[in-house]
Image (cartoon, rainbow, N blue to C red):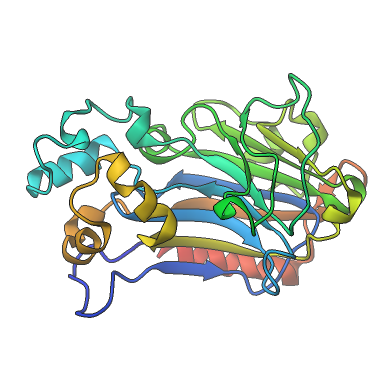
Length: 306
């Protein structure tokens, strides 16, 4: 799944974004995304997420992987070769990547909900990530939602240099008003049922401490989460990428850079090993749904391989 890295943008418009949206919608269960490579480059805003298709944010949103303007050693080398970097810019003087976390980036798993859906406090040791806002409303605080920063090589250059990794989300909204997420970088062996894309069942109760956990204070907030489409996209500029563009050391303006420098986007692509969903069949064990439902993901995997 790749952006155009050959042509200048057509006059009057920006570089085309890329988006895949599942035909079917999914509820409580386990979502697993095995990713080899995420898009990097100034102006890029990639995301892997699930969301309601009606009346957002009241139906909820889960951002599994999202970030903007992350770079890698090779993407910065490309910009230097093309003469796109001001010698005094942060990217030119900030040292090697992916060791520089300011440019490699760390992912944040986030929720966006209806108003008045705060989270319960999370006891020490209940997750390995770092909590942000406790207010998940998509209509307050500039729609930052409630996020948990994922430690380690979770996004951008560091993620790609490490061969990617696996994100898993356990959505248990209607039983316990809870969502949990795990991340295994490629150099860490995940549980066997996560690693094996042919697994017919998975059991998140055996996966250890989650990276992120969200439990709503009010049970009614869990009811705000409707069935979701799965969305995989690569956007350019926009609110998030433009707000962080200069701070990440990127040259000039986001719009101009994205329009007229196609060769800077050779790494603006997703590569997935698999995208999986397991529906609830018992309290802690989740099974693959019907073959008709999974035809969607056979098609999705084919499209992503193009």
